Image 1 (tube, rainbow, N blue to C red):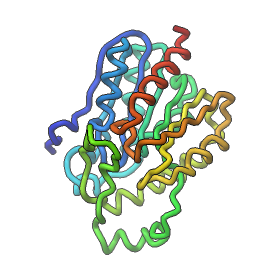
Image 2 (image 1 turned 90 degrees about the vertical axis):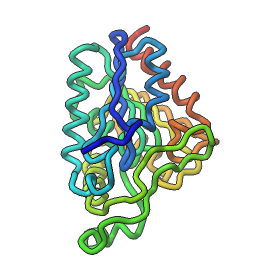
Image 3 (image 1 turned 135 degrees about the vertical axis):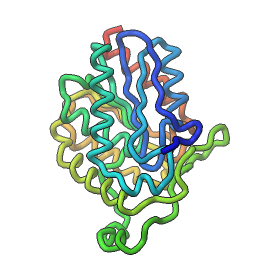
Image 4 (image 1 turned 180 degrees about the vertical axis):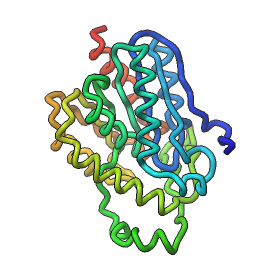
Length: 249
């Protein structure tokens, strides 16, 4: 299936410090491209895969599930680790959820992680009826382009397929149960105002992981897709500094 222009996976060859970037649900690598370019310009090796069902159309996503997303992220991590002795995984939204899973299941490969508005729980009451609803309603209005600034627009689906959403909820539950297995240094960025993911996720994650080095930074001028928003340079700069500290350079 054809990938939308701008939604393609990307990679940049650099030094021995590697960063795996993971995009969010109904989004694609476009939301992380400026971040990847920033890290590339700093000399890092960067990989950002396209998760199955994303970057094409929402009907494609409806036929996918979280084990496929996990497998793609895992494969990208293994490929990057083969070339880079130090790998830091960074994710936006569901990409942050997958980042946590990779850290829990690959303690030797993942040296640190950076989360931007990651999600492991949702308080939306409609999720309680998602099981039967997904059999009756194929999709609902999309949640993409939650951006406060005017410099970028997110290239995302205008519909959310409920079958895929139900699979994402399963992933959330899995990762929530794995948080205590995470021991790596962790940086959490959370938007004060987010119309997609409840900011309370940040405190929950910080309290449940077993990491001794956890820092949470509140973003005061960005919505959900903060990697394209007004606070993006803060995320980029601090994540670079963090990655370099883990590599000892």
